[in-house]
Amino acid sequence: MRLFIHSAPPPKKAAKSKSKASKPAAKSDTKATDTKASDAQPSAPSSLEPSSETNRDASGAQEIYWLLKAEPLPRYENGVNVAFSIDDLAACTEPEPWGGVRNPQACKNMRAMRKGDLGFFYHSNAKPSGVAGILRVVEEAKVDETAFDEKDAYFDKKSVREKPRWFCVGVEFVKKFGEVVDLATLKKHAENGGKLRDMQLVKQSRLSVNRVRREEWEYVLELAGEKGDGDGTALDEKEAEDTAADAEE
Image (cartoon, rainbow, N blue to C red; front, side, top):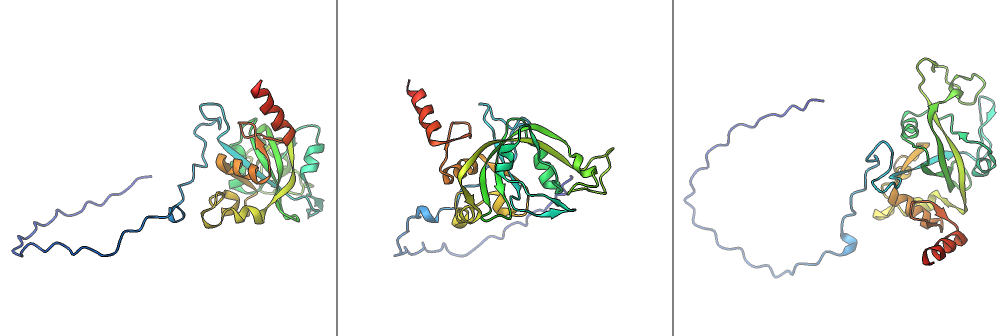
């Protein structure tokens, strides 16, 4: 993209002023007030783009996390029930293809995922909707074959195999939270410059595959009552205690 910069005309010479020097401004009786911490502007959010194609920083830690939505309650598309919950994922014995995504931005997010990446499993259109647990990417983006299947819930008649439009990743179950971190709670922590104010889930509520900043990931884990093991993985209370004990030995 080219930028066209318009040059300004040369400045005119300033006319010599014959006016007398102005008197110094009178001192104000109003004392300057200290800026309260609550009035300070929130810091700018970190980038939603990883620094490298591996999505790992110099220490090897994951930079961008993910949030993938599925509907746990029955709903039919093309005569097929598309319900899928975190319990369904837990029951899978092999990587589950996260197919059926038909939004370009959501698909782009999946193509940026790397093997080993962690993400939140989000229950959408549920009672309540919210973050239900954690999944792991075990297969990087590949062509979504459901787009070519006329009997599939998400068949896309415009898709051609020679030039595929849609992709999916393979995921596995990691952990189910004791309680769903519901959408109302997430939105509450986004209000008034809260920790989740810039979360993509809040900004683009209809997007089915979201990016999550590391600080947002860690904060949602706190809301879920989870403890991290240092690389973003959630541990339950017993696992956290065992990890702490091992570190002391």
